[in-house]
Length: 348
Ligand SMILES: NC(=O)c1ccc[n+]([C@@H]2O[C@H](COP(=O)([O-])OP(=O)(O)OC[C@H]3O[C@@H](n4cnc5c(N)ncnc54)[C@H](O)[C@@H]3O)[C@@H](O)[C@H]2O)c1
Ligand SMILES: CC(C)(O)[C@@H](O)C(=O)O
Ligand SMILES: [Mg+2]
Ligand SMILES: [Mg+2]
Image (tube, rainbow, N blue to C red; front, side, top):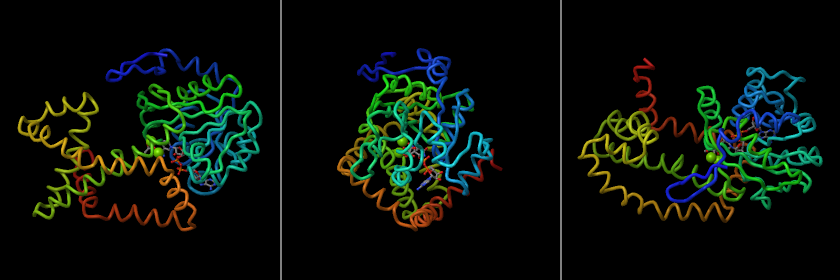
């Protein structure tokens, strides 16, 4: 593995140079990879694996939009698209990509087909780490591995098509065959990862739940809303408030951060902006630090897992979720956002 200096800490990562696609194909040449679930990660991983030349089948509950999407993506019923149980029987590697709640409900079906020597693959440490809540305890004679792309399945596919690659973490929970590590890394390369860094199931789920509730999704909406609401309350127009809060961030400044880091983005703004940002960022950090402490505690105590599982068990959960997403979409800030997006020259 390549040793990389991450800000002073040496870590080993797997790159495409040392583990090229040809090697991944060799490791998995006799495997049937059954991707179970065709929601968001399922399509990204299944299509990338298929395009990379692996033997992929899809298992998905028949009927409904995920099944239809698999058909639209070229999977053929009875050939490489099956009901979940059928695919689990055929697969030598079972990529368990149902929703985390769906994994609990289908576990007894999947477990039946985990015969000795197969591999059970997750893209999240959730089911195994919170086994007391999920009941997911794999049999001892199968490999249990993880490859967790660090981003949406939509981005995994888009970046692959563009010739780029999302980074993923990987982990080995159980090595029953002596091949678990090679299988995990080969699958990580096969699904289109840019590079792979090692973790374990618990660290993956703790960091992932913190990230998505925090700076990736929850905190960012909170920060945007607080600034937008302030500007509106002080008499600024919606277009001004939205542009100064969201549009400039996503369209102008975040791409600069992605390209060359925060200091470089700062250096490409005025000295006035730099003075202010350098003076204020620590105040924001200190204000939210206690919230992040609460968040991590809620993750580590399994409280977040409990909330996720219990809310998903409600029969009307999907309707409620849609209502909450709609509330966000219909808020003034995001209606202003829709208008702003329409005004981008490329959308005109
Ligand atoms: N969404 C992402 O981009 C993303 C990113 C990284 C990791 N992950 C992880 O990947 C896994 C899959 O996540 P996802 O967001 O793609 O899932 P999802 O919510 O899109 O669901 C995937 C599929 O599960 C099926 N499903 C749900 N409940 C079911 C049930 N009870 N019985 C049968 N089928 C059922 C649905 O038909 C759906 O097609 C999860 O472990 C998740 O944490 C997701
Ligand atoms: C895409 C994310 C947020 O990284 C993933 O963790 C998820 O749960 O969907
Ligand atoms: Mg997640
Ligand atoms: Mg994530």
